[in-house]
Image (tube, rainbow, N blue to C red; front, top):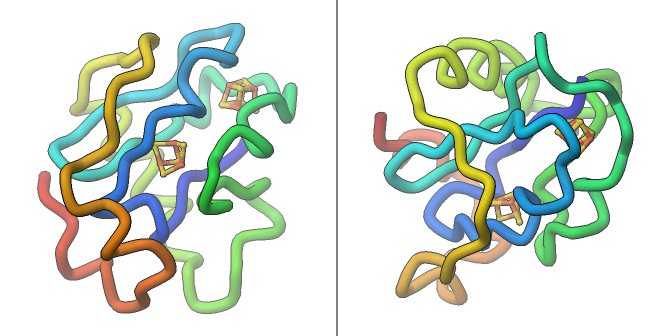
Length: 106
Ligand code: SF4
Ligand code: F3S
């Protein structure tokens, strides 16, 4: 499956959700995740993210391996999102910042 990684946190642009043919994106307060049991590896979402937060599970950036389990866990708790909406208000300020995992809201 594909995995949403750290750069999405506090940005949540949601350009990724509308292309998913199996509606496997789930939305939390400041982050999205992909349900690994539903993702069919179609690859369509990956290029939609303007800040490159989506990776194949086997190609997650070094140090971000925890996001594989986080996508699996949080997709069970959060509701499905299928329609694009505006990114978070100060998303621009958070693009590309590191250390955002501790800011993840559940
Ligand atoms: Fe959905 Fe395809 Fe992205 Fe998987 S790879 S989350 S199926 S758009
Ligand atoms: Fe997040 Fe990028 Fe989608 S910022 S919500 S993974 S478009």
